[in-house]
Image 1 (cartoon, helix red, strand yellow):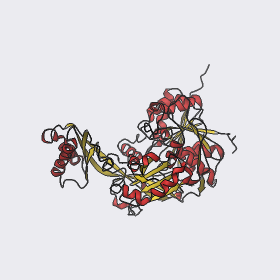
Image 2 (cartoon, rainbow over the protein chains, first blue to last red):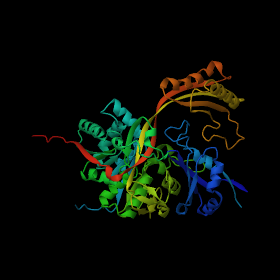
Image 3 (tube, helix red, strand yellow):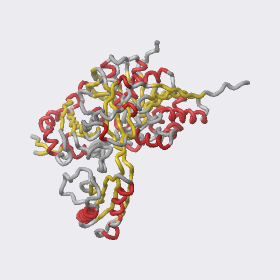
Image 4 (cartoon, one colour):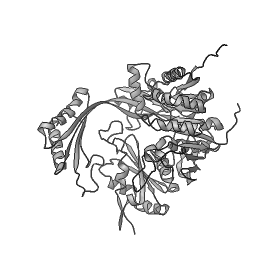
Length: 104
Length: 451
């Protein structure tokens, strides 16, 4: 069975220059291991392929049941000079939550 | 020097960005039992824009809302004896201090303001300095507007020691605005690594104000926030080891819970094991969060490593002009008509701009594609944006979009056009010892009435 991340986790987007930082946080502590297994750095890069041009680094933050994705070259050249409407990528949290994973 | 150490120190957060709401800070200062109130009002680009204003008018260059915020806050912070600490000085902290003194004098309130300067390092930057984003030299950017080093707690302590009612600064690392009062009151030193790290976590949780009380979080049916139109701003009750409880004033809206706290803890953190500020390198993976009653979250356990020998510098440069144009289509075939309009603009402006983008608002403008491809938008707004070297050239974009009114697809309405000057921001590093922070005091007292 497939599930959207939206059903399992919440997410907040932050920015530093041309880097988008996406925090994926499990609603229930017990789902953290599932997220850790399925939502890998390469999987996020594939899901957001048309947005992320650079490297995706995944940090595990088990003390708050979260994964931190640091996505380089993802904000149209940088927050301050991007021609995009959402130059900060504030809405990208909800693009990540559209991702589907297999759950047993 | 010996000061009586408090059992708990309450530090509030009254603004999370330059344009933030005005009244939550007043509510916090009035009924929050605060000792300190921090206002964080300086985003990456804000100081560069302030520098542009200062170039035109040397007495300006401070925060645009300074006077409005101070008119509201001065009477309250004086009455309640709350010390204010803020980066609203932007590109001109001394002029900001003088404006505050003028406002206090008119209101017949005794006031002492300490302005912290020394963050402006434009004259110290060299063409060969490395730009962190590109790895290349700074000389690639021709028209520099500003360069400001992120100051830390050590630059704020002398200002706190003057006893001033208000400490006003330019560029300071956001968490340092909140860590400084705790370090000052409890006498923490740079090598109190874990205390400085915990105080930095506290500052990081507070720095965006409403972002830990339900703002930038609410999602109806999923993450519901009560009385969302009136969210209260947060405070921290900090103990002498830097552990704290985050809370908010009674009778305010919003929520503080593990959802809001976790989101803010990780917000904009590029390495949870090494959160670098001028004061500390903090490990957030050792932080513990615990719900400690309604709208109260207990925060403990962060650990620290020594601070970096370099400070980050935020450099503003002139990035030309951006022209934009928008027009809307609705009903049957709305997306196709908007796309046809976009093709017309792309054809007519071909070769005019090095950088141009066409977006379909209501469909793919935010994420570049629609993840739910089955949804057919009822209305779509075309948006075109391009960068140019001159204002006149940038204006072409809006002119072409507006002309779609009579020359474009059927039913195009609500055309708008904009041009704005763009300031870009890049970063570099500077050796800590090159920075010489200074404190300048401005004050006013009522003269003793003679009988």
